[in-house]
Length: 182
View 1: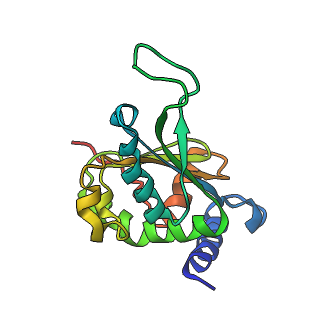
View 2: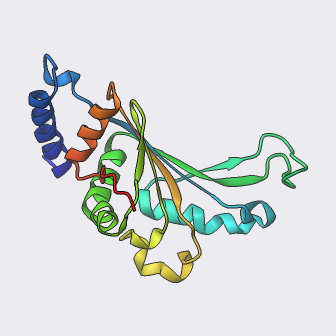
View 3: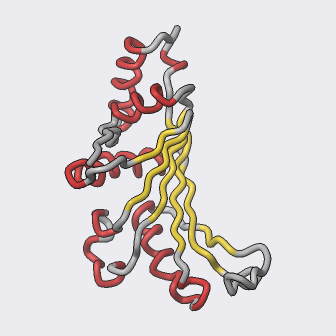
């Protein structure tokens, strides 16, 4: 049994005691994670997408999909079928390994440094953004390639039925659920 399954079973037992559920199957679970990167300079030069593509590939271990424009928009100087960014959707084993890496290496660093709200919680979704890729262990050896990357937006989807239930579930994995004000 890997550490993710072990911690999930412990959190499920804990949630079964804290929430009004009939059995462990009604407790929230992780469904999928979506990571996306985009930049305004990708539209101007197509080779700019390569570091974004490689960063997501190294970080998640899964090949990203390139997002392309569906139609031309003259205001943004955007042509049809031009690249806009990269996106990765993680499920099952890749989700477990990514979430485990995030909980053990990235979230403890963020909790010490972040002063404001870190994530926005919806009923069954947690949205947050990472401002720098240099906090990721897989990318740190290649900092000269990725030093200009601005960050990415991440989404974890759960089966939580309300915002407090989703916050309680994510706090069990040491996800920064705190709310500090200045």
